Image 1 (cartoon, rainbow, N blue to C red):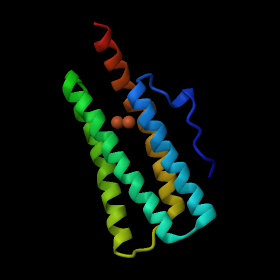
Image 2 (cartoon, rainbow, N blue to C red):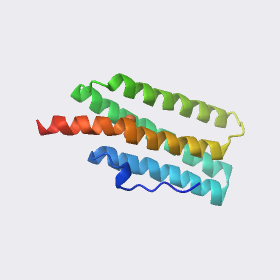
Image 3 (spheres, rainbow, N blue to C red):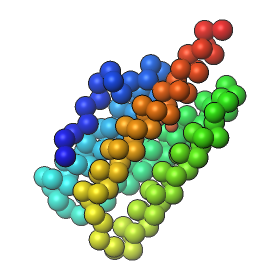
Image 4 (cartoon, protein in one colour):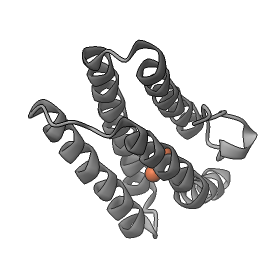
Length: 135
Ligand SMILES: [Fe+2]
Ligand SMILES: [Fe+2]
């Protein structure tokens, strides 16, 4: 699977969101790298934990922005975050219980979910925030 390139096509035009998305993409790429090159389950687990932790922090930041500015589409956006959080919690739980994890499938899911979420959902929040701050 190719690494994700964080280029302008993934930028939503909000400096904070873009910085955090770049960090998340960095985590996914790092995970892919350790899966392919290190293949040590403890290292892989550590990167997965870091990624899940950072995604929680990032979602929290976006959710605070939605609240602070009264974002009208927050319900849909929050549900999307909640779905990801549930998947991530299940993944960490399985991992802690020693279950075998399909790393290829997980990387595919993370890559698809994040790029789709940025391009279709986060971009709308960024557009809304831009309009707010110009008023
Ligand atoms: Fe989001
Ligand atoms: Fe985001």
